[in-house]
Every structure is written in structure tokens, then in C-alpha cells.
Amino acid sequence: MSDANGSYMTADGRTIGGPLMEMKEITLRFGGITAIEGLSFNIREGEIRAIIGPNGAGKSSMLNVISGFYHPQEGEVWFRGQLRPSLKPYQVARHGIARTFQNIALFEGMSVLDNIMTGRLTHMRVGMAAQALWYGKADREEFLNREKVEKIIDFLEIQHIRKTLVGRLPYGLKKRVELARALAAEPKLLLLDEPTAGMNVEEKEDMSRFILDVNDEFGTTIALIEHDMGVVMDLSDRVMVMDYGRKIGDGTPDEVRGNKEVIDAYLGVAHD
Image 1 (cartoon, rainbow, N blue to C red):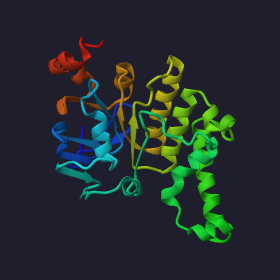
Image 2: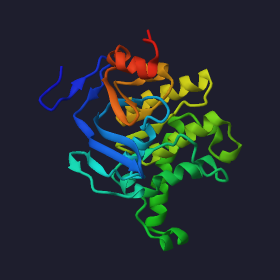
Image 3: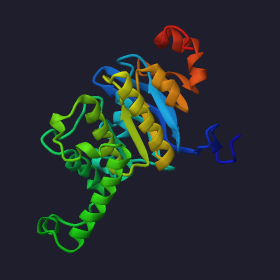
């Protein structure tokens, strides 16, 4: 049962709040191609929100709008109750939005620890000169940032690879390191673009567990794109379905699973 602000408690005891992000009538075009057309939806504080649909449906384009890589020609983006102007990706990150990518985007010649430390850039306040000389505030800031990163390394159970060069890691661990780097930014909203793609069954189970733990223990709101319907149905509080840049379904996993238009366009058959 929801309160006056729309907040409610889930069956597993988590609190879902009001809208953290609202996309209103978003239209995105590339020349004569419309990638997203008049799409509206919201992401509620504390929830795990899935965005699904066939290839080319506009899912990654929508994530790119949220994270500031693309700027829609029409519509409004609201975040934490305020209309958001056009921002560059680093400015969006400073507002509390972090993401992972469909194609892993790590620094392969750097260690796991150093890669994750780059996620702390939005929290670094001292100048380049102080950092280079390593004194005063720079020293204290480095210590605090390192402490945050070490906690994330422990949380994601990657202590044994913390000094390993990322280029030497297997695919599944690289995906975990990318998640760690995003978490290092301490986001209010975490965007995950196909977090389990290319993984074997065991790796998917591990990543799913970490996603649930991030949401539960950190209280981080999560929006994810995912093609594995088992993962989507197990993790998500709500699911939004896109096809040809439009929204064709939106609701709980059970509601979406029973939506005839969604079945015809994407699922093919109802998933039990």
C-alpha cells in the first residue's frame, strides 16, 4: 500500500519511494531516423527498473539520454524533482548518475584498483599541483578515496585481483570491475547496460546477487537493460518494454509477462 508520496514497501521489506527520474515525451532523432518517439516513464527511488525490448528498440539510446551522451530534440528530463538542462556526461555524473557499458570500457593497462579509483574522480576536490606533490589535503583526500574503494573491492569479492592488470582478467571479472568503478562514484542512480551479457550461468548468478545487494545494502536505485528474461523477472520491481522507439508495456514483471503486445513483439510466448 502506498502513502501520499507514492512510496510503498515491497514484499521483501525494501522501501520504494517516489519518482527519482522522470522522462517526459522524449523524442530522439538521428537525421531522418527516429530512435525514440514520445516516450514517457519514470524510475522510482530505491527500485530496480528494467528496460527490455528487441535489438534496435532504442534501449541503449534511452540510457544515453539519461547519462547525457545524447540530447533529445523533444521532451523533458527530470531528476530529483528538478528539470534537468542539457548536461555533458561528466556533469551528469556529478549529479549522481553512474553507468556501466554494453561493451566493457576499462583501462586494460591499469590495475583493478587503479581502474576503480577513476570512479572517484567526481569526488576529488584538490588541484593537480597538490595531487602531484602529495601533501596536505591531497594526502587526506587520497586516503579517504582509497578507503571507499577498498570497501567496494571487499563488497564485490575481488580482493584477490586488486593489483592485477585488467587486461589479464577473464570477461566475467572485467564486468565486476566495471560495476565496482561505477559504485565508486556513489551514485543515486546506477545504469547497467546488459550487465550479464556474455556470462556463463555461474557468472550470471553472481552478478545478479551483487545487483540485489547493491540495491539492498547501499539503497542505490538501479535501471538496467537486459536480454536474459530470467534475470529480468527475478531482479526487477518494474519492467518497461520498448519496440521501435516506443513504449509498448510497463508494469510489474507479471503484468509485462502477460501483456499480449509485449508477447507478440518480444517475448514470443508467455514466460512461466
